[in-house]
Figure (cartoon, rainbow, N blue to C red):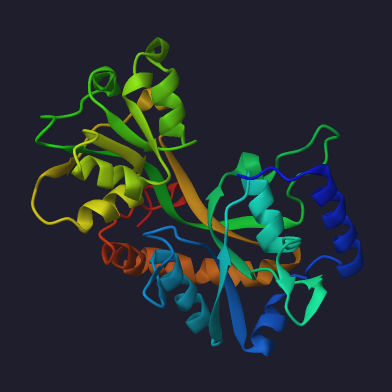
Amino acid sequence: MKRWSNFLGLLAAGLLLIGGPSQARVYDDVIASGFVRIGAYRDFPPYSYMEGDKAVGIDVDLGRAIAKELGVEFRLHWMTPDETLDDDLRNNVWKGHYLDKDEDNPLALKNVADVMLRVPYDRDFSYKRDSLGLLVNELVVMMSPYHQERWQLAFDTQKLDSVRTLAKFQYHPIGVEVDSLPAFYLTSALQGRMRDKTHHYANPREAFSAMKAGEVSAVMGMRSEIDWLLHRETGDQYHRAENGFPAMGKQAWDIGVAVAEDSRDLGYAVETLFDRMIRDGSMAELFARYGVTYEKPSLYIDTP
């Protein structure tokens, strides 16, 4: 990510003072307006991406389902990831980004998303406090987990018979997304003995293309991304590894939504919809359309 100069930071602060922060819309405002803005990450298949001139993906479909549930028009708010999740929440849920201007009023920020999708749902993060003991994310509510994500590895069966341990990549090249947890682990574990065999790419799609070109023997990334890439392949050359990777730490995490703190009613409406979709199987069916393995969030473990 780019690092801005102190001058740009001061300029941004001045613009914010002039234009003021974007205002989140409460449930009644959304219904009265006739549309809902759904925040989804740009160029992030299989969740949200463009096919030609059409927005598609799991989260785009979920956004349309939210709009239908509310009886309003679906509008997509494309998000570009910043340095941290805190930055993304600020830029897209409660304040807006200082570079995202309204064309009709250059001093005013564009409106933020009403609902932000694909937010890691973690209670400790939600209640994280700063050095003064103040809540870091007090203006945001993270809720409605709808999916559990985890790490997944795919390998070329013409290069490897199986992958029972990541230690194999002391001897075989593997592709990972730059600055990801797999990248950190593979370059630091085992006293760095896998570092030279770890190849970094801008995203899992490029890593997968490198595997198809014979540059690496395996690719590691989030399961949904790996599932989607394998789903698009013909033949049986590339397989999923069946084992977990406990040495990497947290193996699975829930994904939910974020709304502004004063938009809880809107969040509850989304939560009601997602709960119904999870329980009646339509959430799993949606994921299956993209070839993605669906796993219920931990809230639903041992529940029908």
